[in-house]
Image (cartoon, rainbow, N blue to C red; front, top):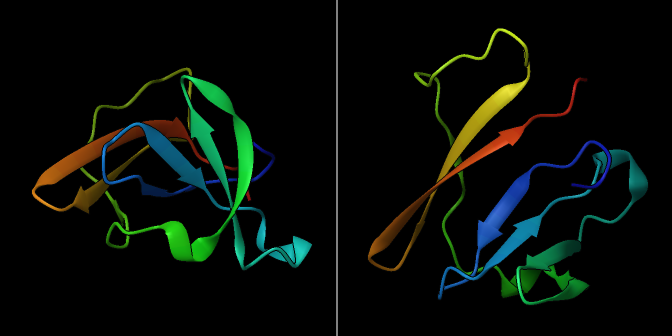
Length: 89
């Protein structure tokens, strides 16, 4: 994932992940779209249809990764749980 980035949303079909940029870069209106079957693309933040992601506090811990994080996103009738390494800020 890009430097200091966190997940921002999931596409309605569950095939794309939208990632925020570090807040100090003045890119607040953009997200990076990541897809298994296509190149990364910049998108307008308005494409995100999912609700705000929620950080999950009670998750498995990894002693070798202090920044292991989980988020949950709800899109239509589906819930997606994401595992990622959070930025160390």
